[in-house]
Length: 230
Picture (cartoon, rainbow, N blue to C red):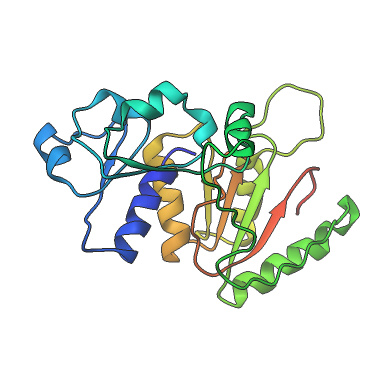
C-alpha cells in the first residue's frame, strides 16, 4: 500500500542505523550524487530510471512483478542477486526445477507466534467488539480489514473501511486510524505511523495493507466480511 515502503525504510534504519538507506520512488527528490554515494537503496521500479550506480547485491522482493529485463537492468557482471517470491511465475519455477538457480526455502517464521484463528458470524458482532475492547484496554493494538474502502451505490452487504472507522471512533475516540488506496500517500503514512507509535490503537484498512508492515503490539486482526461490527 502507499506509504508501506517508506515505513519499511524507517524500520530498516532502526535495525541497521549504520547504513542510512535512502528511499527511492516516484516522489523522492534525492540527487544523483546522493543515490550514487549511498551504500543502500530501498526502492520501487523508479530505480530503473535513475542514475544509482553499480550494486554489489540486489534483493528483489515479489520478483514476479518485474520482468527479467527489468531485473537485469540493475545488474552488472559482479552483482549478486537474491529474488524473493511466494508466487513465482512459470519461468522462475522452470529455472528452479532444472537447477539454473539456487533455491532457499523459508519454511517457518523467524519469530515464535501463537495464532488463534476463529470464524465469527454476524450475530457475534457484540462478542467481537468485546474482544476489541479487551485488546485496546490491555494496551495492545487492533487491525480491521474491510473488503471496500468507502461506501458506494452497490446493493451489497460488504462493509467499507470509512464506515467501520467512523463506527469504531464512536467507541474509541481519537484512537482509530484509517488507511486505504483512496487516501494520499501522506495520509496513509501518517495512519501507519500513528498506529505503530501508539498514538492510535486501531487501524482500519482494506486488503491493500501489506503483510510486511510491522505494527508493534498488534494482537488482534479481524477481517470484516459483513456489516454489523457495532
